Image 1 (cartoon, rainbow, N blue to C red):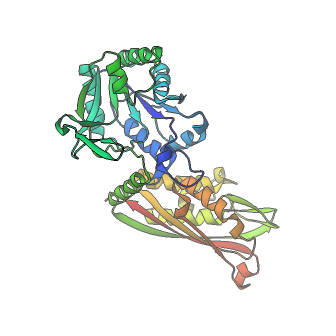
Image 2: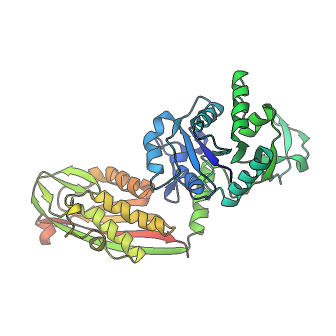
Image 3: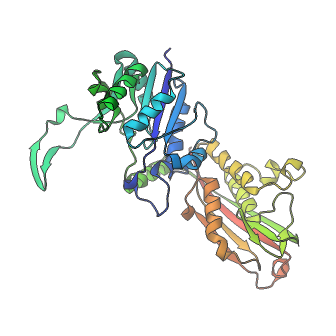
Length: 391
């Protein structure tokens, strides 16, 4: 069986995708609780005929990339992208020189829903013809436009839209890219065009409409809706936690260190917010509580950051093929004040759960000086989590 490698092109900025100010490039935005790149890599990592994967990333995106590859195998070290897509692909091809695969697939990071049978067809097609691209029939009428005037209608039967992964014999596509670079040709929009320019006969095979490229804000919205529709089992869980104060200089709430005249007493960092969230997620899964997963009698959790517990709970949802739709927490405390730290808590929690901050609710209330919380003897939190699972 031939050795097959994959190059994932993930160095672009994706400005047409929109998103809030300061949001990362589109391949690192989340869809259904996972980054686009993570979903793309999972599709190839889980495929039995793929042996090696190299991702080409922007030099500034190392931290985003690291967050997207947790738990994935078959990945080699990422390589930096270039000024153009062709230069990025050449960098990926060079990174594979030591392993010298027989076949290489080149795929856009922004196509996270590539089906396994498309990957199969790509491998077979390259093994037979040496160069192949997936295509879809064009169903709309296509016409040339001159400014704002309609021109000639193109013959629809001869037109196809082209997708990725595009597949090639490794040595052949390396030679084609080298030829284009030597001629100063960096204007090709896909690797099939590079291969054709290099003298290769490029065959076609059936693509899949599901293998869409996420380009616009509407693409992201429709992808979210599609994923939610595929997870019809909606579940909710609740969690509650309380910790008393002891002498100290800060409290940790929602993963955020907040200066205070006391600290919360507990075996770990005593983060009542994250503990309540863990129990809410475990409750939605019907999977015990935080004490059953991280017993206080186990000294390895002494002083541990509760974000580790929350990440574990999120992984349990992921292992069931589900997503976390949203979480909500109410904090009961006289002091310290939570409001100024709400955005930081939302960001910390959303980063751990791989959801957007608008899916994290943080509220706080005093107890009007009533009870042990009103006497500033401790802090409590109650949380809810909504998850969606496949049936």
